Length: 319
Image 1 (spheres, rainbow, N blue to C red):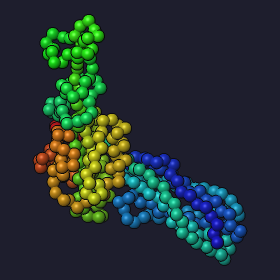
Image 2 (cartoon, rainbow, N blue to C red; image 1 turned 30 degrees about the vertical axis):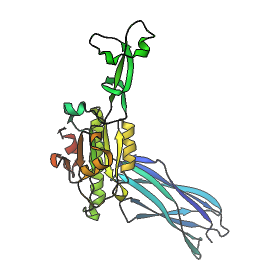
Image 3 (cartoon, one colour; image 1 turned 180 degrees about the vertical axis):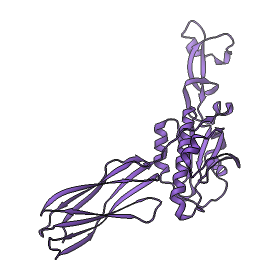
């Protein structure tokens, strides 16, 4: 029996496209039969690929001992990359005895997309969008009487119904209520990944879609525009994640990396409204793998999905 303990780990939980990640394989041999050489096989793949690429490592042992090897991997596509132990084969010095057994063990690495700056112009209506929201600004007052922003001294022109009578009774002058400003998400950025994409092109198309959406999202943050990233999940459920900061963008991307193709069941904006309500956003943008940014059935712009970096940097999108 081949008495080995073999583990596989990744040096980093997340990398960007094109960056190397170390896959560390640690081997502990406790067998009675001296083993001269171990061959450890492991496979690695993007989660959209059904077939593994397999590497075999030769590890030379001196009786009972421990050792480790590190292999650098990199991916040209974003997504979840899995490295999985497959099999170990051991033989003595003369190769008279050879033993093989299956292995279990897996390391998961999130491969994040490259993000590019896209010049954007936002309309005044989007910048001033007020949504049906339970979130309120902590910096700016508004005119929603359901939530009080703060209390201030009376100013000429203030209405008497704004007076906070309880506070006024404790002060020398009128105390006036300032109301809160609801904070909405003016835009929904929907990632459209239909199942009609040929299987051989799914990895490439998904990579382009995520990279384009991530770049658009990051550029919206640069314009201080809160928005939702949205996509179709399991059982045709429409997922969404609010993005207000770079940290929230990367949190959303960690979830989007698991995106799968789906059978197109109809108009996504209608389905989104049925689930989240029409008043929860101002504009619905759909990004497609073919390089289209669409809203309300109209194409707002087109980017070159084959030369994504050059076309996104040169893209000017007015929303």
